[in-house]
Length: 211
Image 1: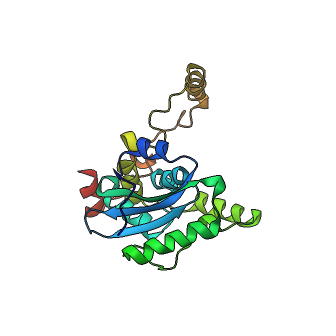
Image 2: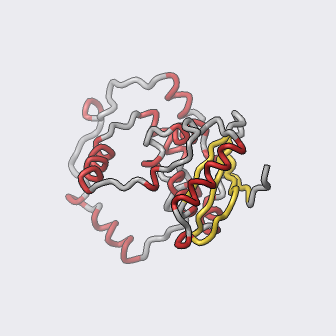
Image 3: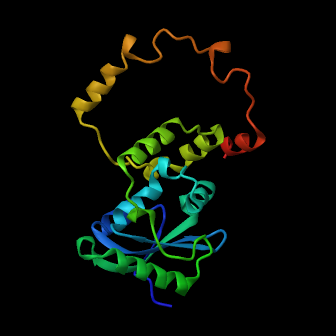
């Protein structure tokens, strides 16, 4: 097998994203618990990798997304198998053929489809984009999933980690939450008025909370 270009702990988000901006390539995600891998291709590695750190992408029901949500980023290793060059100089066929080569080479167990291809190349119509947006907006997220996402994206793994608001922005945010502008203004959320009143948490949820 060919020698990987670079290997990273998945928690090194900032380093990974800064190193591969505007570069096309092939990557591998290794689950340290199961020992299984996933291989993907990217027109822009930085943008594609960033998707694995955003909560809304990890509830898209893809197999690899579900595994990251289940095990946490700290149990995955990110490997750059090959850099193909500047994104603007790459063709779809070249990227896909390279991805297929590595799928044959590594036979990754987490690729449910052994044929290379990526939704990155699929163009949604404006109508389908609207439907997807509505689906995401209205999609119910279970309490258990919310807890997992909260733990998964704390600290440096948060997509907005190290992003600082200006003093002007912070002042606007502060005033937007004062008095009647606060969504909780004049609302009693104690006792029976609390949306969680009378609801019991499952043993699985309690176990995750206690971690």
